[in-house]
Image (cartoon, rainbow, N blue to C red; front, side, top):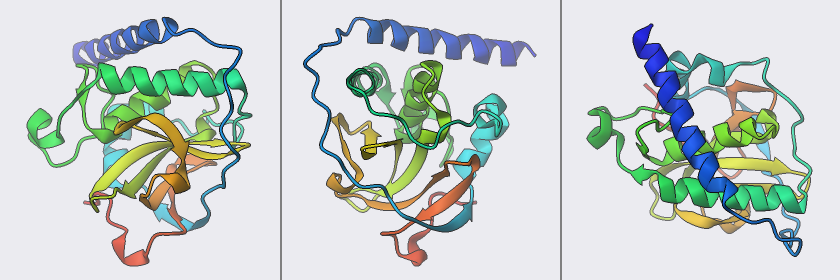
Amino acid sequence: MVLMLRKIALTLAVLSCCMLAFTTFSFSKDVKLPQVATAVATIGELPAPFGWRDFCRKYAQECDVQAIGAPQIELTADIWQTLRNINEVVNHDIEPISDFDHWGVAESWDIPTDRKGDCEDFALLKRKMLIALKLSPSALLMTIVYNRRHEGHAVLTVVTDRGDFILDNQADAIISWEQTGYRFVERQSARNPNIWVRLSDSPAEIIVSSRQ
């Protein structure tokens, strides 16, 4: 119980720190929305990857099936600026470190309460912050890709009425999924965060994403 309370306290502390940094940004009336993009097509359901299942064991409240909402977000200028600000704040506030160097294991998905983490931890914190700001969890989807170096990578997909946009710890700019140059493998289902779906530009033989 003590360890659980300590984890909750640390999570709130990191979230508060990031939110405080976020509030220092100004919101300009001249914010321009991105060009309309496309939505990633899905081609069937998959079991959740090991990293997400293990994350749910540690952070059960983050995987609540009841906490679902609209499958897409209406992308206003204020929301677009919010996405940009949170992406930048988290990218600069969290120290990148591999799971092996951090925890001594090959794979561990976590809210980065010690302000250290790898790609999925960045994405999980952004997801948590945006949900705290009342954005629909069903439109904030953890996503597995292969980056331009053909390495496994995790990002956060934001599904909007203007297309699917990517929050990435490797870039402060938010761009549409098709502009990333990534190979998209799988992501959470909008109807249930614990069900994942295969994405259309991914050959079936590379559905790996740290399964154990």
